[in-house]
Length: 356
Image (cartoon, rainbow, N blue to C red; front, side, top):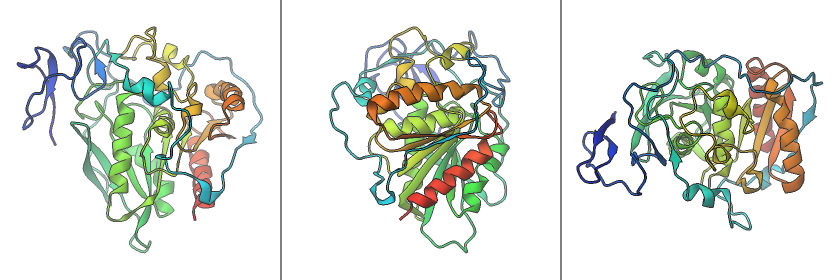
């Protein structure tokens, strides 16, 4: 796998990521210290001002909201199975759309370096193999698991996005319900995670990587490109939700649990965010909420009845009332972490109902 090193580019005079075997190219836009593999700028990683090591992926998210005791309720807007569009479907009125704003945006990183979580160099378990997928100029690692040969090919596929900022062995266990149901399962490691090249951007460049992973799985010879789904937990759920704003993806729909964030989450993450949260556009382009009208395909969001993120449901419902977006919300038992098994099973049932 190609790895990147921050060097002074002799052509552009800027600090860039050099990948062995690739030529150094001038930086495409004039922003301070821009890495050509990202949509971001910032100082080179030098060990100073970095994140604290050992960030706990599975710690509760201390979002500044008041706890609510909600009854477990079900709110879902279903679409006819055959009418579910792929994410490449067009939408009306793209003036000032999410995509237009994203294309003209340069995130200014105040820290350029690895993701803020320790990781172990793991070998994939039996029956799982490590693969490489390309996102821009980055070559990134992922694990791929295929079900038993008794399942007929081509297989439906699920790209599972882990919580936290590094893939761990337990994440494959979290995705096992999809594998046991006969799905090909890809668990990607995104930029700056698990020793991958690139800089941590927090829900921006990582979504580019997620889109690349979806395309990679859809192109696999044993996978049915017309039955591709994405599901994620926590931060990974935020990634899966943001995929619905990206065009041209072979996704029928996506799902998340504990990943329906509001802008206040960045206040809680102030010790790890790599950008200036007060700068216009930095928060807004990293969230599905606030951009529902620009969704390209359906998203099914699950929230634990005891999750402190449950407040986002009220905010989402207000926006849904104004936009009629393709977002469905279901409250399942559990907190931010214990809600994951119930949400995965519920999403599998939705897939089954939406399959032709």
